[in-house]
Image 1 (tube, rainbow, N blue to C red):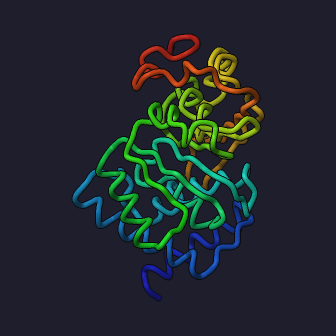
Image 2: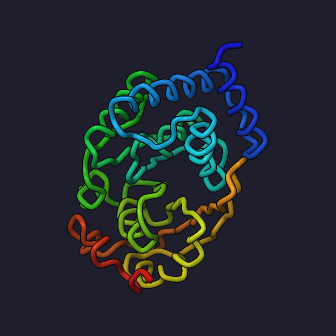
Length: 248
């Protein structure tokens, strides 16, 4: 049995067990190729701190796919991935849900280049990679209020993430912030940002990844009104002056 077969078999089993998601042979082959390219590029560029194949499988691929607990196992529509890094969670979601039209937003040029390489190498259709700040994209007429879904994984504290995600969403669209153990405290701090930008926390879903002791959460944010024109503020302002109480 090859290394690729071992890796994809593990991902297939965990995705089925944890998410009820049945990945096809073609999808598993795509994940295996993605993992190999991630390792190869990591030798030249600092794309991710994770190098062990089993950690990539759980902490990158499976963690990304947990968003399907909110979106359903066969979602469609437009999805924006803010701060995509090496393509997480947007590319795994696209592999698992081909009907999604995905925009990957990443300000780091090398990481954006890697995302383009993966999109081209896998022949993924309806995927756009933007090497840009989310604040700039959120003010573009082509992207503002245009998305059904917006996701962010390990980007920033929730009040900052809200300012980056909500301007991209249609009214009624859902944002998903993938957070660690600080999620409950961050939700408590997010009221001013939600009120100002036009959202509400719909639910907070606990996630337990195999072999990962730290709790994780999907914070689901519904856009309930049109975002005022002044948001998002210029690049860096959401982090410099987040809406809400200062970080303790």
